[in-house]
Length: 165
Image (cartoon, rainbow, N blue to C red; front, side, top):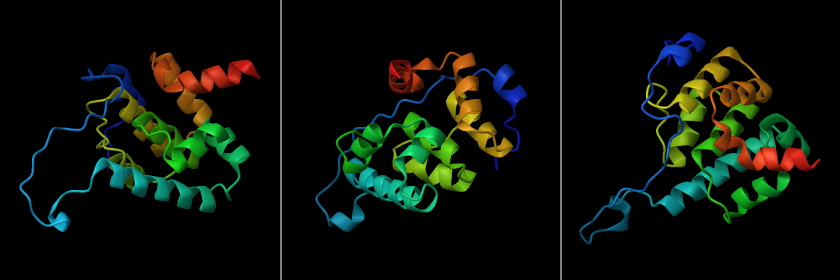
């Protein structure tokens, strides 16, 4: 899966965009049974929060300090994601997946639940996520590479937090 995504590919490829934006397409449905309708964004976010909780329990042993050092996501922010008061966006999923060192298959699943199909040929951030996971690199490596490509927006909350300490 994604064998062609390498550091060289990231450096030379012409991406359509740097970072994905998740937009909900306008859809209309006939009145029918709810089981025939696709899941709503709320239902997908709920399922995504459940997956985050599972990974928090298994990978991070429910330890927010470990999560913060591995994913660069503060305890306060993670609590807001998990209780649903803040939506989980693709850049959060990227940081979480890299920090937890998830498989590409699991990463694709989590991105899909936040409303984004992992597309490393289209988005530079996605390509960096894929390459970081394939190479087994750390969140610090991910941070440095994304910063080197000017993807500062995904770190805005983290930089603000880390500059205050």
